[in-house]
Structure formats: structure tokens, C-alpha cells
Image (cartoon, rainbow, N blue to C red; front, side, top):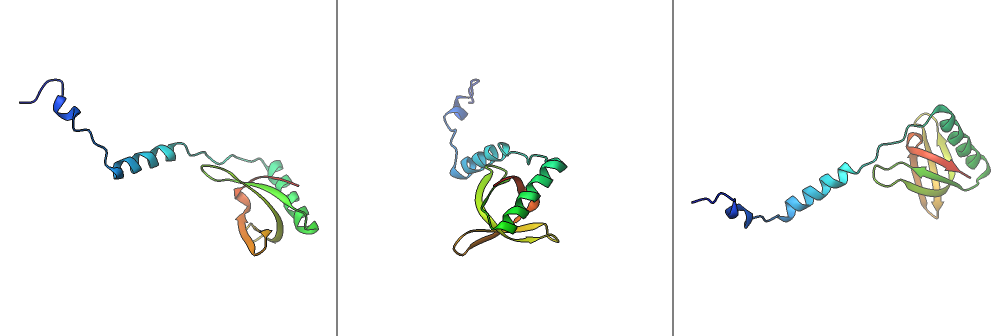
Length: 109
């Protein structure tokens, strides 16, 4: 009835789209990167550059952590909320966003 070599099951291997999507999502999740740990000196340097951009209205380039691909933003700091530990970025006409300080990996002017 059933063959020893599992020929019956070999011919019925079909992957339905839902299983394929779930498998691809699992593989992508496994490639996720962890957030790098910054020491106190690096955090202070980032904060100094943020304040400098805010005080001088000078553009700053930030690298913001993302689990898959870190995002590089060039912007001007328009507001600093120390209570929420966030900065408001201006990237162009009507393009504002708030970024948490803990998500910023590096800053350069």
C-alpha cells in the first residue's frame, strides 16, 4: 500500500502561498540585527552634536537604529524634549518627525 521510499509523499509536496510567506517572514526575522550598545562617551558626543545643530540651525546627519536596516537622516534639530528624551527633526518643507535619543546610533555635522 505505502512504499518504503515515501514516493507517495514525495510527489505531493506543495507549498501554499501562506506557508511560503510565513517561512520568508521567519527567515527575515532571523536576520534582524541587535541594537549596538553605546558607551557614555559616545552618548555624550551624540548629545553635544544634537545641541550644536539645534543652537546653530546647522544640518546634522543621524544614523537611526532599525532592526533590519539602519536609517541615515540629514536634518536640522528644531526642538529637544529632555523629559521624553526626543528630538524634533526638520528634513524639508512640512517634513517633521520626532526621534527618540536612544534610537540614535551616531551623529555627525
